[in-house]
Length: 365
Image 1: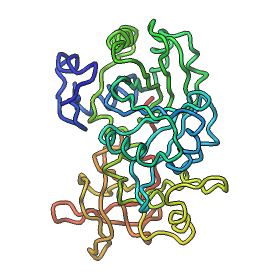
Image 2: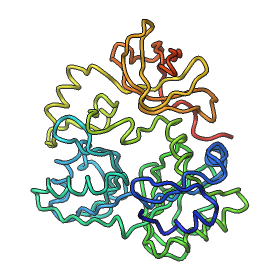
Image 3: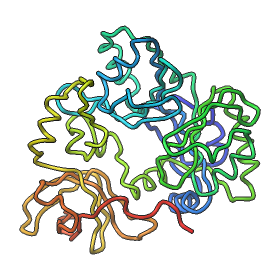
Image 4: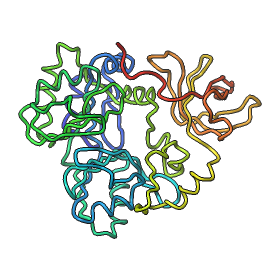
């Protein structure tokens, strides 16, 4: 298995380790519930160095990105980030990703760890514009420091004014004595905080500095288990569960990152524009159980007659709400908030209600 700059440290700290996207990653330390509440109320640190990073450079960078992604990259100023996806040419999604406009004619793409090779091949094979592509996934590490006290902890280690970095924005500066660290406000937990991108050799220096400054705030390392429950409470889609090559952005509720502006011609534009105009037969929804039960990925969703109307894509017991919550694709007839649906759990139909996401607030006072 691949490792990150922090793998040995995770094991030394007693983390439960497991393979994820080819990496030996920490799933939990003190327990998923405990770690979940640390992030919601204090500050936690995730090792997300397994994520992939591609540089796209040159005068052809923008035309290439406009073709290969659904969002309008031409509207992205330097210093801002954008959530988008790669359409696969058949109406599905190759991956969802972030694009950072780093400087003029230079962009950073951050892709899912499990899709690094797939995405790299997709970019290279579709680069008819001649953009300069560089796969820096093995030369970049990343920590996500999340929680309502994250900014207070991190600000002690940099002269960059973190309060001046709005959501989906970033700055580059010195952090913990390390130059050229990307400080990004694009969290996946809803609890506030920053992502730090740096060279792997600087990893331990940055980790130690963060934990030293965070002692008084109850800082803890957080595993991928709590990362999943945190993102699900916020209704954030996970590639491989809620979106994949068989789901369209329109079905997945990602019409807001699918821009049909006049000057942008992208893969699947005609098909996706048709879907938006004519509608789709299913939609990704959030639901909340109204009786006891734990919804899981792959469980059937039914109507009150027991007819199968969809599938659960993500599900858990919400640590904050203490009820079963989940996401899944259902027939459009049942996609409106308030609709009653049933989750098939151990051959029993457990009632649930379609609800708007997020399921709960990102921070616990």
